[in-house]
Image (cartoon, rainbow, N blue to C red; front, side, top):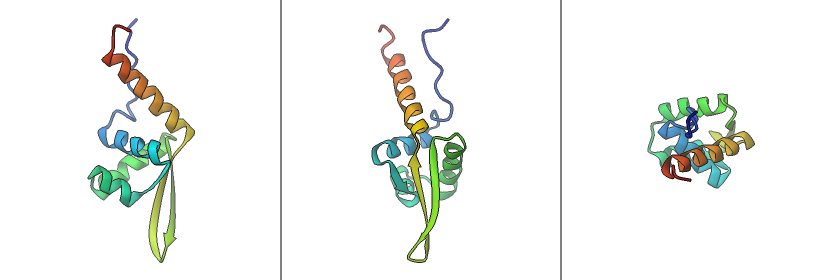
Length: 98
């Protein structure tokens, strides 16, 4: 049996990990803010947000603000748990003697 846990494939994507990392700190963020912070394209970000949503790691709310569409993303309790587990697994990789 290996000492190393398998890394969550949902979070192992660079962009999805960046999105979850932002949401851990802010709880909720606008799509445009996430796009600006990650430097991703709107299309790619949309695909990755959909994958996070389908996994239950985030919730997505669409509404209008001043007649403009607004997409809000917030992390779920499951998302927080999975992020914590992912970080712990990475620490185990970095400190294999422990």
